[in-house]
Amino acid sequence: MKKILIVDDSKFWRLVLENIFKSRGYEVIVTEDATKAIEIALKEYPDVIISDYNMPGISGLQLCLYLRSIPAFSNAGIAVLTGSDDVINQFWAEHSGANKFISKLLTKDELERVLLEFVNGDFRANKNEKSMVVNNIYDVLEQKMRKEILNREVLSLIQFARDEYFVIKELKEFLKNFSSFDSIAFLLISPVAGRVYNFGFNLQREFLKNYLVRILEKPTEPANWNYVGEFGAEIFVKEEITHFILKYGENEVGIIAASNVSDRRNLSKVIYDANESVSLLFNTLNTFTEFKVASTVDGLTGLFNKKELLRFLEETHNLSKYNKKPYYVAMFDLDNFKKINDTYGHLVGDEVLKILGKILKEAVGDKGIAGRYGGEEFTLILTKIEKDEVVDFIEEILQKVRTAEFPHGKCTVSCGVVSSENYQSPTEVLKAADELLYIAKKSGKDRATYMFLPTDKEIKKIMDVIPTEHQAQT
Image (cartoon, rainbow, N blue to C red; front, side, top):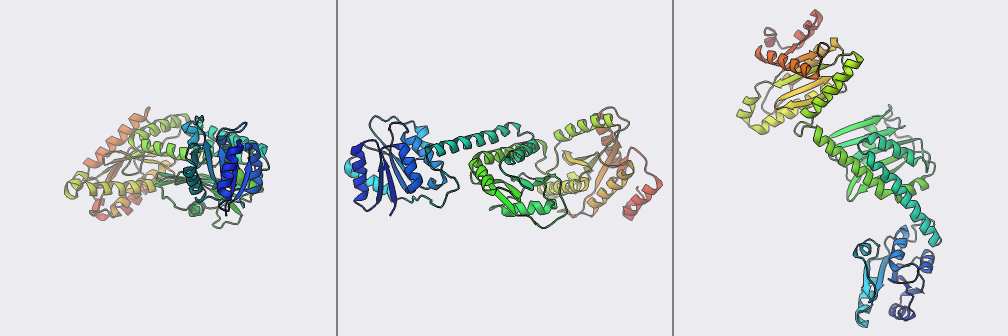
């Protein structure tokens, strides 16, 4: 039988309600004071609480809020009885935590039917849930205050969502207030981008990513992954890991994982109390990343779009002038792309663009960025490459395109490559690369033209990778 707690300052209503439930064999506890009701609830753990709305001191709504803040009563049934003079704000009623509001103006038979139907619902207090040590109403008030402070502190980080690394670093420092740990990692995940922030785990980045993803109940496969932090060489987890899955609504938005946590109970309690705010923070960071990607990335190829290319080019040019170190721009154009579209259709043409985009993205790696300039034109901005490496690098890309499998067969590209060292503006660099691309097109396609002449040694390397039928043209 369920245990029922009745709270009402009216002796008449206490007797009426007590008689309804006791006559059916329920265990009933009665009190006239809401403050006393909280103390009773913390000792007896009733499965159902029936409370009057309007009482001296603490109201029925406040009683609901207090009890719902205690995990043991998260699944208990709470009904609030209202009289003729009670004016209830609908918003606060919906957010009070009460399961049902019942009018005292109902007929005796109808009131009895509604109350018994409610009590027979699937309500139970969880007596095993004692992660919060609560002895009286003052403990409840203190813990509500602590929870509000924690949530306010976490939510204050949302204003810095533009700088995700700063937010994650601040969150790490915030958690260190409640427990020490050897290492901590944060996974943020959405269909657009997954990000792994590592602080201290001596693990390979792919292994750490896969380890965290396996923790998720319904893993999402993002289009791109980014890794921040120092990663090691280990492929085995040797530490004791404590992890927390963060959900926003039904969606898993991230994970916090820490090793060798000194006070696991305290850290768990903090993340539990601030869970809603931390999840909102992670969801906001994911949303901001999605908007950022949408505004900077070409939807078809996943490469940077023209707007982001030009922004990066200008930034790179200014830095190049300051450091007195040149960068290189390579413009690519798919040969005979119009014929591919006309012959095989635009769907095949789109697949061709995707495959070329993937080749360029994999090739550029950390040497710079790859972008789609427009149509079938692509651009590489190379910032971490030496002059004597450029020719080999570009020729390898041309060869990869020649040997790649495309939906309709084979493809080639033409390319123009220029160094920034003799130009005053980024626009001049881009224009020069485009002009060299035009020369490559007019001189036979499937080749690259360079602003600088390669050495004899480099020419030999080029000839070694170019098929025999193309060498005469070269």
